Amino acid sequence: MSVCVIERPDSSLVADLHPSPNIEPRKPGFAPSIVILHYTGLLTVDRALDVLSRPDCKVSCHYVIDESGRIIQMVAEDKRAWHAGLSSWHGETDINSASIGIEIQNPGHMHGYPDFPDSQMRAVAALCRDLALRHDIAPQHFLAHSDVAPGRKIDPGEKFDWSWLYGQGIGHWVVPAPFDENDAGVAPESRGADIERARALLAAYGYKIDPNGPFNPDLRTVVRAFQLHFRPACTDGRLDRSTLDTLSRIQLPESRKDGRFV
Image 1 (cartoon, rainbow, N blue to C red):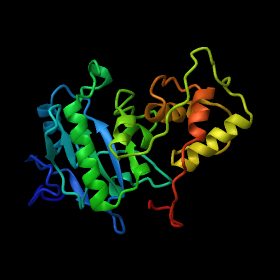
Image 2: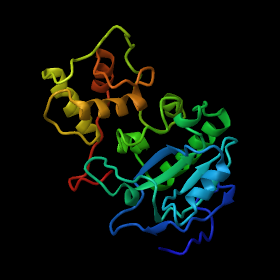
Image 3: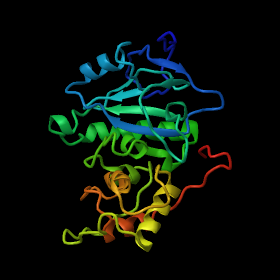
Image 4: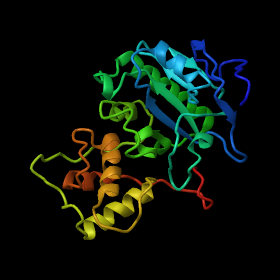
């Protein structure tokens, strides 16, 4: 375990430092190329800072943003924080080495899941713009925790406004196709062209999904993760026309030949 020292903030937007000991060097060859957005899932920012800095909890992140928009740095950007856990994107499984983790203070679905305040969202946008500029991070590499860990994680959830963030020049977005509550979607365990297409598009975008198979629970889990990000009006995991249409309009990111992010 590395010594929990931050000599100076990496960003001029940082208001406070609260170093965490739960850090490591990034694996050789890795630099920040994606940003993972989380919610804390804890009732207060003080509780979140405590958990994220306790050695016995074995979790950390680079930044915490409280409800007022105050930005707190916990881990230097050149270090590997422990925020993503078991996760994958474009075949890369060491997401902690490839990413910067931002925890947004919100008690989450287990504690009422309130809206994200405007002041907090403005701070998220400002920090993300700063990271994008300094690390040359592509728009499609600003991701939800649920994107890289479908089923295991659902944060920051359907109330996080990716559309607004895109309007601020951050992240990737397409306007979702209108949702029809009477569209039951494809049947469980069915096969067909729509299912093959959905699997191919999800895998090409970066989600961990077998390119072959029926509409099974694994595919439903990944479809829900996609909906949490791109079709938040309904996140039930159904592969309906709205979801498939929205997915088909996602511009696919380019990837390096070695599978690393660009």
